[in-house]
Image 1 (cartoon, rainbow, N blue to C red):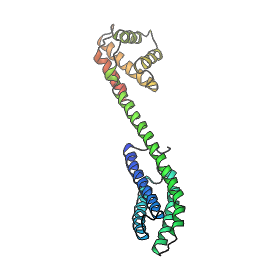
Image 2 (image 1 turned 90 degrees about the vertical axis):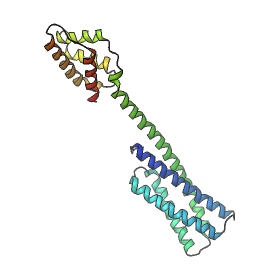
Image 3 (image 1 turned 45 degrees about the vertical axis):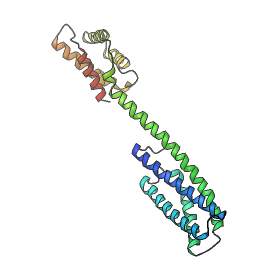
Image 4 (image 1 turned 120 degrees about the vertical axis):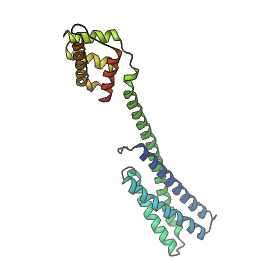
Length: 229
């Protein structure tokens, strides 16, 4: 779907669609009962009157709440169905008995709406899964710095090369991105370089001839990278 919904919106929309589905199913059932002479005209009028009001209210809620975006695919057939309901309801009000023909026209619209609603519910499920996957990916990125097991000898070697200028910033940054960040933060090379440079500079101040390195330094560096994402 073109419209990206928040999880709360998805849940609200799903409830709304379920209720619309239920109302349309009930309407179809009532029509069927009357055509089979299982209920009389007064019973039909009473049930259709209730369903008509509920459906109109639900249609208004859907349009007002989602502003026609989420329910774009079904508002047209729903609108046509609502128009047909108004005609049929008018026949009831004025006591006409030939409503059966009107309801036969309604049934195709009901079928269309039910199909559209099922499709929308399917889209909702896909959207839910996408949102959950995105949330999980964000959590994984945020916790990456806690789970990395660095090769301390390699870290020491690479940063020594940086300090002694035996390796260029591009080489070290490229190594850091590939080794530390893998493919997760390929666009963070410049930020990686700045932090590496900061760590290297602080180390040289402590010991001009030897890089002072600890696991704590490394963890703080990774944490700072994570916070920049």
